[in-house]
Length: 65
Image (cartoon, rainbow, N blue to C red):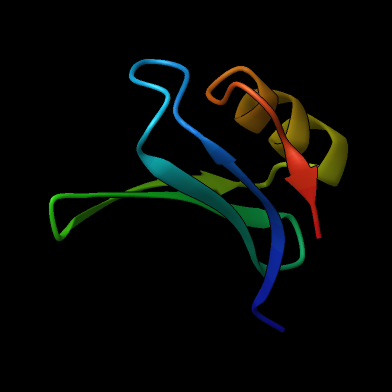
């Protein structure tokens, strides 16, 4: 069930890649990778539209997969 939903670059530095993953129904994860370190933010009991909106607020340009 895990699947990539969207990608983008952090709106803080414009460089750090960020990914929105669907983990299971109503559970999404935002992952960012910088300097070999990965950071994760988990959204549980969250509808798809809300997860995508939150992700759009974190990145400059969203690319839906």
